[in-house]
Length: 231
Image (cartoon, rainbow, N blue to C red; front, side, top):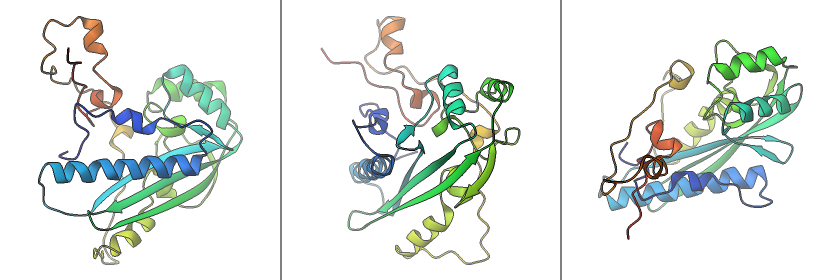
């Protein structure tokens, strides 16, 4: 939590797609920026130097990047796009210190079954697609859209473990073969909302003005709300 984006940082801006940007370039750029920002926070806060791991996952249908859905209708549209087709899941991983960085990219091919309107409506109603690239989670227990997977399963979950273990070894961290690694996505089991603390200096602001300070990430507890503009 110490390396989460602070109130003055626009964490969501990092995930904005550049004009004509291809999926591979996009996910690698975003991950490198995440690592750079995290290393700056580490230095700024005077914390003990240690390798920092950052990753980002995106879904691509051809050259079209399918990020996180903006709302339920957007999620349904994404799932209709993926229905009966093969898409790519790309996860870029970056590990670094102030002196050394290591970057990798894992790509899996995923083919969806033909999805019915009922399948899509029921899944979107669960709220599970929200916050997920491509509007789905392969590990969801009640939604099984995948007909075929070629590549790393944990890459599709969001972190390719084999790749990560090899990268950690470059920084002197070697896990024994008998080490058990569990991949768990808490949002597949529960939904929660974080009510952020009122930003300093926001006294007297209207409800609409306050809403402009609260980002999606601050509502799920992975960053702080924005600070009010200074006059």
